[in-house]
Length: 174
Image (cartoon, rainbow, N blue to C red; front, side):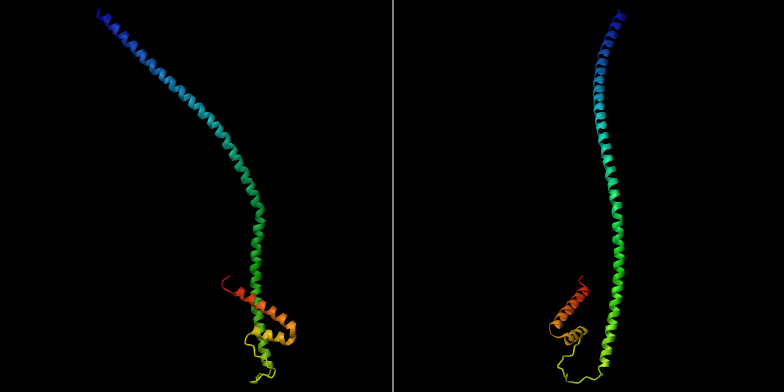
């Protein structure tokens, strides 16, 4: 009788064990179904994203090619601007040299004119002309003496405008 009770207890224990194993296996099956569904959704999303990423890469490649093409078109302009800067620098240097030489020549001419005038100056000026103190004033007086009237006034205005322009160029505020 002990054997039959033992076998009955073993059979009951085995049945309980099978019931719990079935419950565990059903729960595992549900979890695996959920995982499978999630993986299918992830795979679908990845396929959509892959398509969009490929489209984005194509667009970026097109934009890069377009920008590269436009940069190649702008290169000659940049080279021209660079060459223009070099030419302007050279022209500026030439103008500086010419200005310096012009000042030297003008100074020499005024000195010769002073020395050719006899070198003596009377206390009274017979023509009533006031002696000029700057080269600009001397130039204006020579225009007035040479042209007189309206032409002298016109030349006067031009000379004043040139002097103002030269002073503006030399001013440190620029």
